[in-house]
Image (cartoon, rainbow, N blue to C red; front, side, top):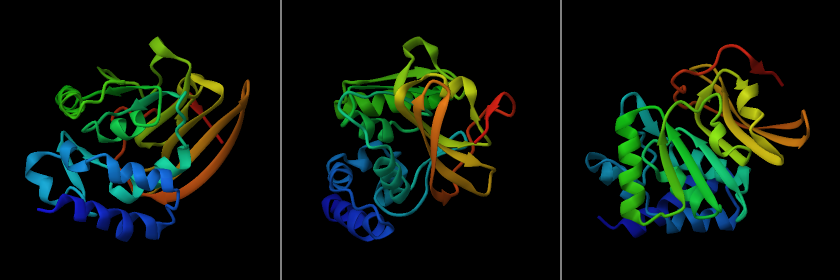
Amino acid sequence: MNFEQARFNMVEQQIRPWEVLDFSVLDLLMSIRREEFVPEAYKSVALSEAPIPLGHGASMLVPVIEGKVLQAIQVKGSDKVLEVGAGSGYFAALLAAKAEWVRTVEIEPALVNMAHDNLKRYGVENVIVEEGDAVSGWAGNAPYDLIVVSGAVPHVPESLLAQVKVGGRLFAFVGGPTLQVATLIQVVGEGQYRTEKVFETQVPMMRNAPRKNQFQF
């Protein structure tokens, strides 16, 4: 299979038409080899619009969503990033290509191993994969410049938002199982937030998604 042609088609036919026009994002999606993070049985569709199951109820975000998220969050070279939900490690690799470092926390042990092995094999050195439930926060390295929640949550927990630095931002898919709003929250001051609803979509719900002590916006 010609992965380079398929990658070009992914960017030009799937991602760019959905108003992902940031050249740095498009270049990033061209440079990180998505097929290296996909289970062997799905390599032939790694660069298509097809959902990629990872097992244990998890799946990769489809490429157009990955592109739209990257365009929204605008990762900076000085960013210290928390990713909630490692999956295959692919999105952590995208984040790490731009950020100072990424800590990605995964609740499912099999996916912890998958992400760790994929990132190590690909040579990504500024990502640490940890096992645990970070949907309500991961205090050890807080505060963060950027937090990305890779699955859907009914609400953004206050405890997670509290771990974002002033001037930082949090991205999450907020809603129920059938429809969510991709939401970017910028922390503009102590207890002060600016919320942007970026696009509507449907992604899998996070395991142990919070249902109380929520941040409302």
